[in-house]
Length: 335
Image (cartoon, rainbow, N blue to C red):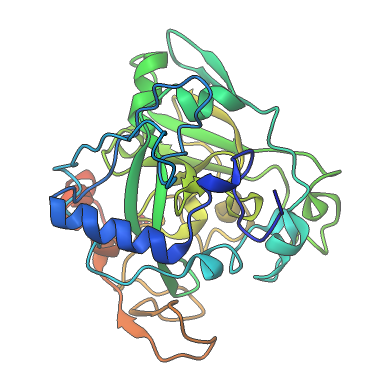
């Protein structure tokens, strides 16, 4: 199997779906009424849980289940091309330029992998690479992705709700927040070995959510996109996706999830607390100190300077699902 930008990890070539085929099948699913996400059930022990788009008729067909809660899913918006999703990234562990991750992350070893879930819970567990792909029913979620830098994408993620994982470990009453940590491996991640390359960040990268944010139906642990396992530059083998928050909250290449009682530190808030708050909800009415957040540049098939400017929506358009989490909060103060 030839390696290419954004190619699947440890999947046979027949599993790698061409973007045009993917879009055609999404159209068919929409016409059939499967509008939210797809739950993937593999019955063969040798079949990858992501191997559902193969044209091989001998493969076990996947089953689909509509997600009635996912009303904010931008199904009628244009998906950002896969090539752009996998080549325009912020992943400072591999460099600060948008092209650095795809150039520098291809040797990242994601198997073996261990994700530890512990802290204020009854049943702490450690998951390996295979369990990340097989323990939970995988779903497709098409989400808007809004970067704090005022650009955005529309991405078809594959993953499972964080809530499903937290149910397994049974949080105690002391669990008020969830803390996340990225892999720390300076030998594989040049940005961790050099402050110049890594943007002056103190690694490992850490993030956090309130427990009610973490168990919200929209909060996803992603293991793939565009019908493939996550490429290294997009946070393989597992990353967080919180679609109503700015992209830096969606931490990549996670090795630790810890349930805690107090608000955990977060990397960008440590680095520049006047610019990056703990909550980081998408809010067109609260500007970044150095630029406006009222609009965004949607990345589609056009070039760098394509005029795809659109108005930014509160909570990135997911207010119906999440606004109640912040009732009576001053969102200018708690940005």
